[in-house]
Image (cartoon, rainbow, N blue to C red; front, side):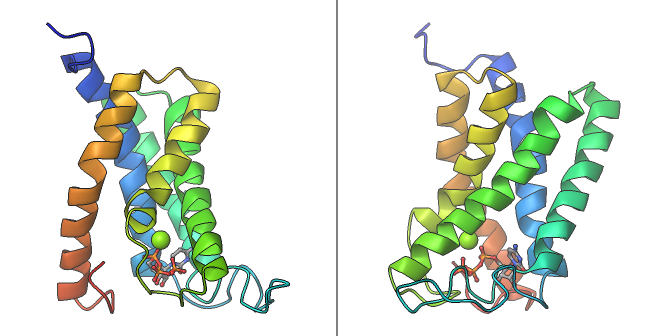
Length: 169
Ligand code: CTP
Ligand code: MG
């Protein structure tokens, strides 16, 4: 079979990274709000550093949810908590913040769409941090990048329908 075609092991490796990544990314939608991480400060370009949608509560709830999911996964599938779940969780939050930073530099208001970046910032952050602690194959990276946009879109539609998000992207 083609070398790039995912093996069962690849799908599981991808799943182990996706679970803490997605749960972390979703937590702030439910628990976020309040004091913004940039404390309301602006960048030299006059726009906010990150904006009001990146909050301490979102950051902390994401880390807590990532740690809980990691603990459950390490119990159920003996996944390595320190090498996968925690870096995936922290990476997802940092990636999302990097995406917001970029959006503000492009003068896009919080919540405004930036296709591709909105769908992938958190998963790219997660991949980068996880790859510091364990090896991720190109196949697994490709699975993560390809399955994320459709899942992200569906979960956002769900959050929008439930009234948790004001926009569906
Ligand atoms: N959120 C939060 N704290 C974070 C990240 C997210 O409180 N560190 C919350 C915000 O309420 C945000 C929601 O989670 O609106 C969804 O996050 P996201 O879709 O990434 O934010 P956007 O509304 O697109 O804002 P931005 O343009 O700044 O990315
Ligand atoms: Mg975002």
